[in-house]
Length: 195
Ligand SMILES: Nc1nc2c(ncn2[C@@H]2O[C@H](COP(=O)(O)OP(=O)(O)O)[C@@H](O)[C@H]2O)c(=O)[nH]1
Ligand SMILES: [Mg+2]
Ligand SMILES: [Zn+2]
Image (cartoon, rainbow, N blue to C red; front, side):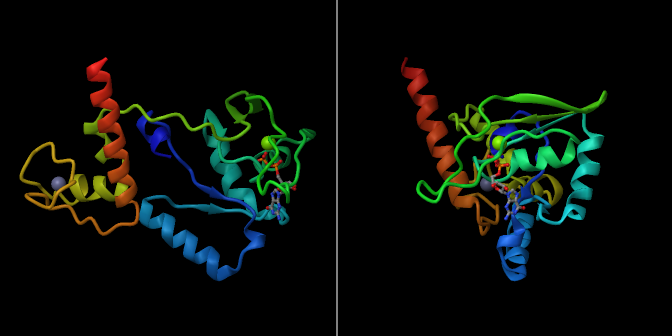
């Protein structure tokens, strides 16, 4: 999600297979991701009326890309959206506990002449190469405080790592992840300086 944000790609977070969890768990997840700054769409593809909102959103966009681990239901969703399409899907393997990469290529499908969907095999995480100074803006938890609430730290380019002179409220779930990301970008940055 942070990679997408860094490229200016709008993120819509979709939780699939909601028939497999309780309503309580579903509410918990909606709330969790709301705090991350994402309004999630929850899907249960066994009920076809459930994806109307998502469909409306997809139709408004020029191009949408389905990303996510293998086996979460990306191709199943695509098959429901595009009438007549019967691309292969396969259940999550019990043995390896993950999807089996049934979709092998990145393929572009058209919903209309103005609207396309790309199905992908899943994730292939590349190390993120973002200017370290831009990282804080990719987290809504930070962005909201700095831009919308106007909090000011002592140093103008504060990375919000230390408490001295930093006024950011760091009590949000992704803060430790943010810190790790800054640390790994830093080591990446210094390594490149040495090359
Ligand atoms: N229980 C449940 N299973 C689903 C749902 N959506 C997809 N599946 C199943 O999940 C498995 C993997 O789906 P697939 O579309 O191949 O996943 P992909 O790898 O993300 O493209 C298939 O067996 C689907 O039938 C859902 O909403 N609920
Ligand atoms: Mg697939
Ligand atoms: Zn700060």
